Length: 166
Image (cartoon, rainbow, N blue to C red; front, side, top):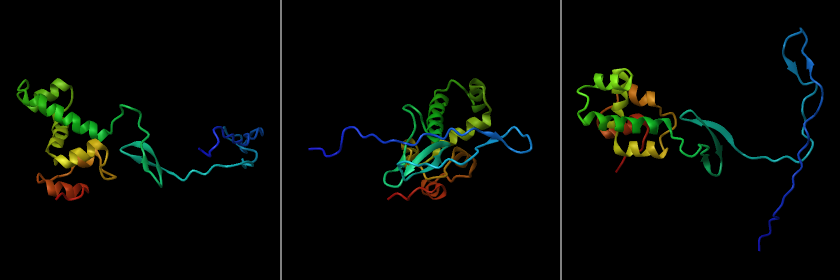
């Protein structure tokens, strides 16, 4: 038998309805006449706010990162890796003789296409971690495409902060 009640009612204090007054000096700013002081039951939820790949996250001590992404939303790193592999497949089809022609078809710069397509040279476990959202904190698209990443996979793991395999 479940001992927790089905309906829990918690009353929170109403916000104060004190009038606001203008600050001295006639500026456009307003401030509260007196600070808000809660006077009822309070709920404490241990958490901190953080960012990962530009997204806002709620980080709880027990569960780790609570993903607040809406369904279908992707990590920008994962999008870049997917785009790189899609572009590589399109280039390998032979329809475009050069990256310059392909970039012109996409309506972007050849240097951008070249930088993004470098992501196809990453180690498979690094790509898998990025697609699963398990990349090390601080890893960004800029860091991946603008660094002189080695072509050897163990060197890539060391440079970008991934654990060694095997």
